[in-house]
Image 1 (tube, helix red, strand yellow):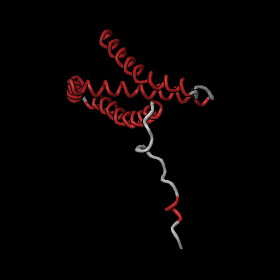
Image 2 (tube, rainbow, N blue to C red; image 1 turned 135 degrees about the vertical axis):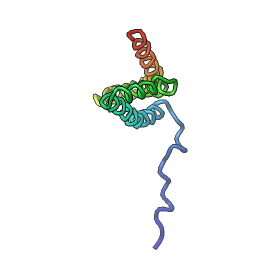
Image 3 (cartoon, one colour; image 1 turned 90 degrees about the vertical axis):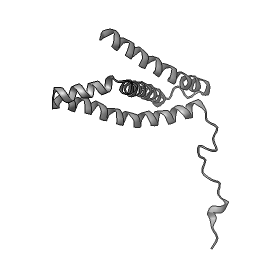
Image 4 (cartoon, rainbow, N blue to C red; image 1 turned 60 degrees about the horizontal axis):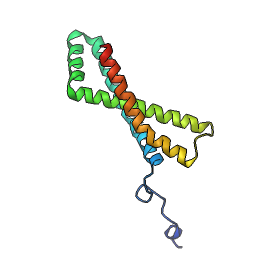
Length: 130
């Protein structure tokens, strides 16, 4: 009996494909989805701290106020906007629109810019309201 798999081509993978913007944004959509799980744990931590008492809540608020905490919160804000924009892109694709190569590439290139801009705008508004 011979091994029939030897003559079959290998399944394509990331090392074979040349990264293109739509591929990179698809990967980023998956990564930001995972990051949102971690961010949701942080939101739950903050809510639990509020329920546990003033001293613990003050400590958690202090942590989120440090530069590391703010960096993590900014990353969560960015991931939220990036994932949302990716979801909107998929929603448009579900209608059968936006599959043209040039259009989908332009949208993929605009997503990181738009997500960072929305995150920065949100933080600016947050600081102005505060």
